[in-house]
Image: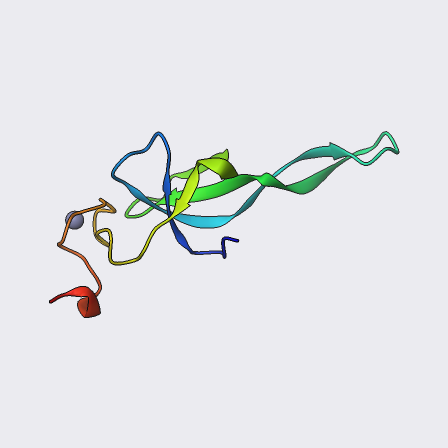
Length: 89
Ligand SMILES: [Zn+2]
């Protein structure tokens, strides 16, 4: 189960790390004919590391990412510039 601010990769966005912000929301009708703006566990809101662009994607497209697998500066997976100090050899 993802926690808010976990780092993830998103299928279709190869090589870039994202931060998981929470579940998306959608209008759900609970049966009383009045749709409500409810969290939808099938959707995830993610933000690209190093950017402030928020995307809403399918939760199945996310894979958790270790924080030393990517660069904290540019968000690229495999870039070694901005790793956490403890990740350096
Ligand atoms: Zn970098």
